[in-house]
Length: 443
Image (cartoon, rainbow, N blue to C red; front, side, top):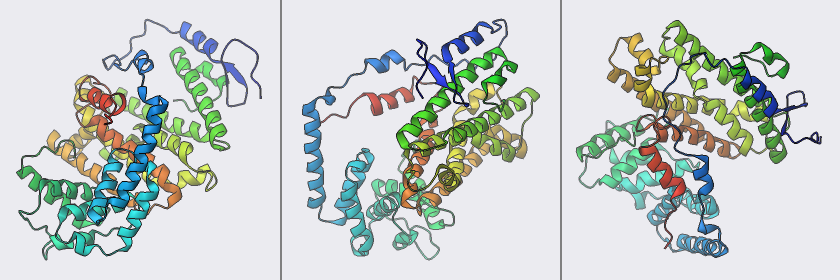
């Protein structure tokens, strides 16, 4: 359908009509009662200005750098051939993965891990905590079967890890990372994590970083407050644009209803929290989390990821969403609990709605420290749920699962030092610059 010839930017609504966004939003804006006092969280201004992003340039888009990149790719492929022993191959794969470059070398990585998975490497890895943990972690990370029994050489008859002066800090750190890939019932991996933390603490290492309205029709919005009408028009137009773009690029059909439902569920969960705040009501932890995993925005981010990367030739949208329900729930819980750990102190000071920490403090009559430790245990359990989903994940679900899992990892990143969104000018700024703005030097 061609758009009406007009100087305004028109947007398709749910009935496939076109509504002029600037006009509708301007009309609503003019009607706002400026005398209404609204609560504020006193967030600092966003330091990432649009002008800053537009000003960023990169010399590496020039042809000579693209040619150089292709040469370096071939050099790395040769390194797979030159890595003659198992440990060298594992360390090469690990380095490539940590640089975020593994997508360029999946053929070589798969060939190497296929050989490692099929070959009995006990003689190579025997007695080496570092090599065993690295092998275990990479196999699980790339979807291969790896049993916790790989660590039996390092435990006593009671499945307790045996302290040894041969175990280096490097080995303990690798063992700790491997333990994070444990699933429900894998007690040996839980023990590996406890052993690693205890011994790393002995070395004095810091482990801080490890550890609405339910309507979509424009005809109905006249009943809403003027300020909400602006939000409605923005959401309506943006959602329609996203649906159209996804359908065009990915070939999906009927995407819009799924986006609408996800947005509706998200906004309804925020409404629940607003009602709790206005009533001065503190829910039980269970009641809070039954709503909080949705208000975390995790389901919304997950649906967008599925629609963006899933293969429509394999399944339809409904089937993908059904298959991903479990990991979406676990990932969203991690996002919610990380958020609460990082922001609860400031929110309590502002008098915001209760967080999971405050809910448990009042429900169990415990201190904040005890409540935080309990919330951390729930995060660990949720991560085990993610691992339990990802490890046996079939190939056609691996790409969506990766993006859904990364949302949970991103929450750990943003809230590890506190409120990484609300307070952007400390660790968050340094991390963003390091990862997205300042290039890795190429020698």
